[in-house]
Amino acid sequence: MFGGFGGTEFLVIILIAIFLWGPDKLPKALANLRRFISKARNMASNAAADLSREIGTDIRPEDLNPKTFVRKHILTEEDQEMLTSPLKSTMRDLQDGTKPLKEGLTDTTRDIESTRRSVNRGSLTRKANGTNGANGSGDAAAEPAAAEQTTRDRAATFDDVT
Image 1: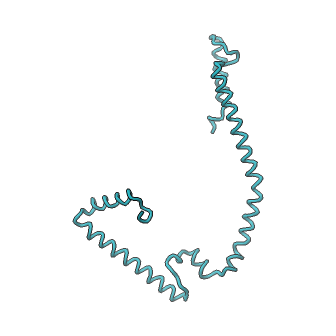
Image 2 (image 1 turned 180 degrees about the horizontal axis):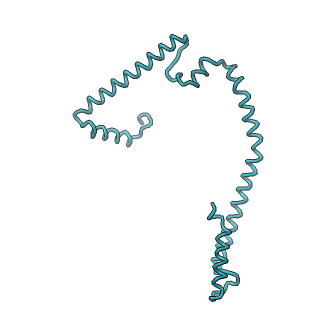
Image 3 (image 1 turned 90 degrees about the horizontal axis):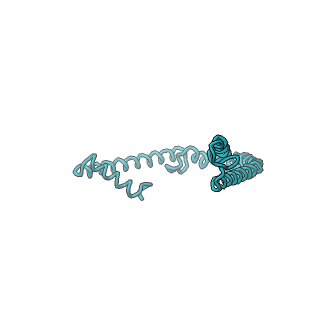
C-alpha cells in the first residue's frame, strides 16, 4: 500500500505517532518530517548532479550502487562479455556434471521414501491383526518377546529418523 507497508502496519504507525506526540503536536511533527525528506531528496539530487558534472556522464541516484556504476559507466559491453563468458561456461559445465548426481539422489530419495512407506504399512498391518510378537499369543511368558518385537518395529520405521 505505502512503500511495502500494508494497511495494518500503517495504522499501527499512526497510532504510535499519536501516542508519542499527541494529537495537538502531530501535525507539526509531520510537517517537520516532510521538510526533512524534501531536504534529503534535494541533497541527493544535488550530489548526483555534481558527480555527473565531474565525471561527464548522466548519473542518477540509483546508479550510485557500485556494481551498477561500474557496469554502466566504466565497462563496455565487450568487457562485460569477456568477463562473464568464462563464468557462464564454467556454470554450464558444473550443471552438466552434477546432473547425474542430482538424478541419482532423487532416485535414492524416492526409493527410501517407498521403503519407509512399505515398512510403516507392515507395522500397521501387524498392529491391526493383533499380532504383537513371535507367536501372537497373549500369555505372560510372551510379554518380553512382544516388547522386543515392538522395539524392533520401532527401530525399523523411518518416521523417528525423518
